[in-house]
Length: 241
Ligand SMILES: Nc1ncnc2c1ncn2[C@@H]1O[C@H](COP(=O)(O)OP(=O)(O)O)[C@@H](O)[C@H]1O
Ligand SMILES: [Mg+2]
Image (cartoon, rainbow, N blue to C red; front, side):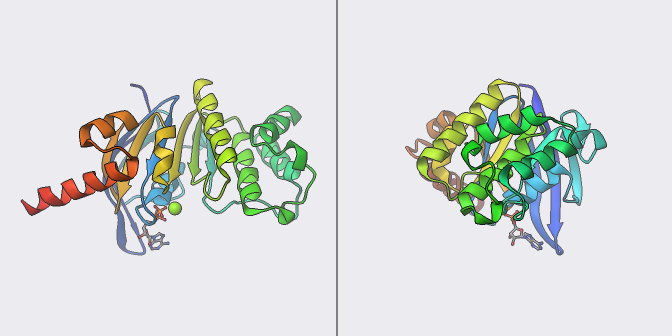
């Protein structure tokens, strides 16, 4: 399995407190990997570290074959933050055009981005007038417009209606088939089944990695919620012994 992201011994402290406690992780290239864990488990911190926005205190992170933070990675990584980072006073298309200009992409990339996130009909609306779900799709469109090889998406489907969520997961799989690597975070365990690979995170540690079917088989659990509980309870039992 070719890795798009290789992480070893990653330790991150925020405001002096350890948040990631020695993460070892390989993220498969050209696939959709779900980064699942409860709120506060360190998903955003891990994604920020891979983007190069968060300094690490120990360990090594390689992204697309380069050390994290390398200048060449800037145009190769699309990052959608958890809070949509969009300009409220610009139109939907204006936001995408701004990102297209930053990455020297043309009109076609803007149109494709709008289409991918289902916002063509709202292209000329001012972003400040949109719902939260629509705003987060603008944010995703902005991350797509540069045509990145690696997409890091922080809870992109939270607060969206089920139809849109399904459509977005389909879009993620299409992008992966076209050669993009996606690492998508969520605190909603139901979303696990939409991913080819999973990373389960809890309290700054990787609890398990594998395919949804593989994790179900090893734990004997029916739902991902149960998989997570069994893994966490199993870890407690091991510690107690
Ligand atoms: N700026 C910060 N200063 C101190 N602690 C932080 C900061 N940001 C996040 N944390 C802590 O780091 C932990 C992981 O946070 P985060 O990565 O945002 O988790 P998640 O995205 O999974 O909800 C949490 O305990 C959170 O309180
Ligand atoms: Mg977060």
